[in-house]
Length: 38
Image (cartoon, rainbow, N blue to C red; front, side, top):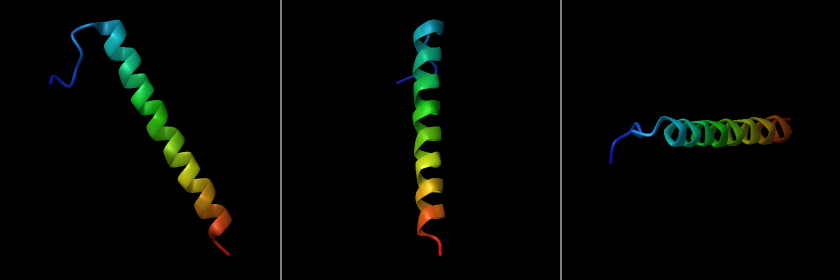
């Protein structure tokens, strides 16, 4: 499977979706770590 999609629109949307989900998971982990820390 190619990492970059030949279709610019679909590839850009997919990359943006992956980046957004990664950023959301990072933010959730940061919030949980901040709440859990004494």
